[in-house]
Image (tube, rainbow, N blue to C red; front, side, top):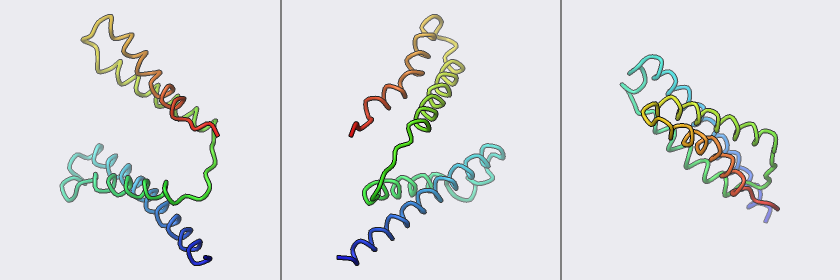
Length: 122
């Protein structure tokens, strides 16, 4: 069934393009609205792009043919996310006192633990 294979590749390209386009648009519009409040949100909700990106991302994950893992990139992203979440937690939990340190440690290591447990060893 050669027709089905080419259709699947076209669907994969379409969903990948939709996901990346909507994700980049969401980030840019959200950042613009953050810098100039109301500049974008006055006319439409930027979260529409996030919803479309989630739908396209789910569809893309179902039709993708080959998947390559990039362990160094994954470690960098997980470490950066943990550091960012730890800094945000440290900044916004100043009223907790001594428990603040333990909460920051938990938040810092949570992305690493999730990455470790969700990693599919094949």
